[in-house]
Structures are given as C-alpha cells and as structure tokens.
Image 1 (cartoon, rainbow, N blue to C red):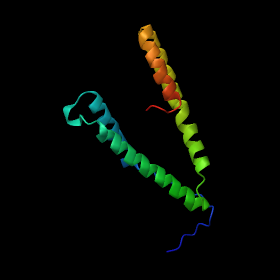
Image 2: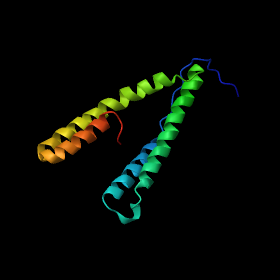
Image 3: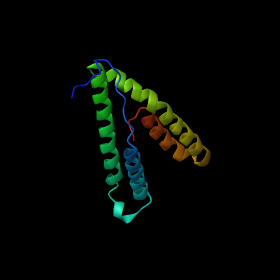
Length: 125
C-alpha cells in the first residue's frame, strides 16, 4: 500500500484519549506519594510513568515532523515547547511566590527566593 501524500504534506496526529488517562494516573501517583500514602513511599512511580508518556509523545511529534517535512528542526521544536510551557510555568511560579510571600516570615522568604530563582531558569523541578 503506497502513501499518496507527497513530501511536505501535513500529517495529522490522532488524539489518544488513553494517554490523557495515563497522565492523570501519573499525577495521582505523585500526589499520593506527597500525601504520605505508604505504598508510594519511593515517589518515583508517578514520575516514571509521566516521563515514559512524555517520551512517547515527544517521539511521536518528532516522527510526524520528519514524515511531513523530511527533517527534524530541533530549534523550532524546542521553541514551540518553550512557547507552550514557559508562560504557564512562570505564571504558576509568580502566583505561588506572591502567595508564599503573603503568608511567610522574612527568614522563610529568603530561602524561597533562591528556590524561585532556580525555578525560573528550570534549575529546579
């Protein structure tokens, strides 16, 4: 069976609802760990699931880009990721920092400021 699309033809990604469900399970596993659920003492289970799913989705995007254009432009790929992720990450960081500053004492704020600086530049997760 031959593919009737020529090089450079756009390729549509089919949405996989099961992946959304698995990502939700991964988040719940991390929350369970932080909530002290004994079965998730290691804390790595949810993070591992999330990383595996992320790797699958990123690989899928790169394969589709290669199929549609014949190449992979990593600079454009990372620019798209930054445009999608950074605004929400910075907004969450700003809101959290402001809320923390409102309810913490000066000593706690000094430590949190270092953490916030690291988080802005993705030096901390």
